Length: 67
Image (spheres, rainbow, N blue to C red):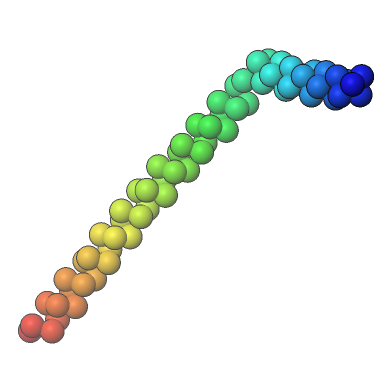
């Protein structure tokens, strides 16, 4: 039982150390989260432009066939 309690204590101290690190270095995680949001937004914008390019190409092909 003492071994189980020491494992539980070790896990609790590890979690406390991680929370302490995050508390003192929260700006690092905010920077990473902001970068990830920018990355997702950038992918979304590029996907929209790619779809628009495909539509323009399709329209150009249809116009070339008609004339």
